[in-house]
Length: 205
Image 1: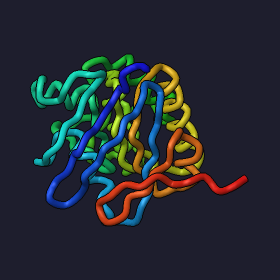
Image 2: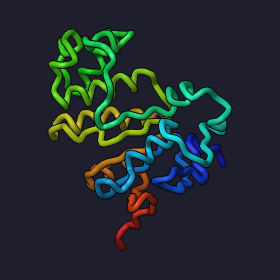
Image 3: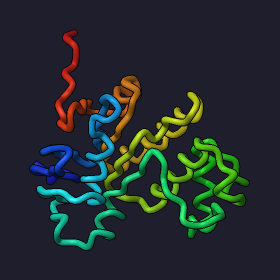
């Protein structure tokens, strides 16, 4: 049996967990649950952004064997509202031609990269933050409501790009409020309640 792309064992913080699960290359685990149940805290814990206990591995390599920034580049967290450190959009993208091409595939106009961050809508910021992460080609994506601010057409475009990444071997943990999206993208569906994850059983056929 091949090594899972991402493996967690006893991962916990004082607020959530413990979590033990594995995601293989090309697998999406969709996570639903009520607001405040711990979904975002779980993703932050996996990304090593919050203090916690337990262990995590990327392609068999333990998290503690690499510097935290290296882990976060490869196990990349995209929050529902990402941070922007510069005033213009373009300065966040070292490869502007690649950024324009990907932005177009996410339903964004090319000129959106030439403006100021403050002029972006919530949906534009959300898709550009996703593009910023995807251009780094991380083997694991931790996605927190990646289409929460989008209309149906834009959501379909984002999901199409995510399916391509899955087909290329990316593993994903996807937090979504939409059970239909969990079904469309998730090979497995889990629910978070009171800081614990449990599998969602398929209804009997």
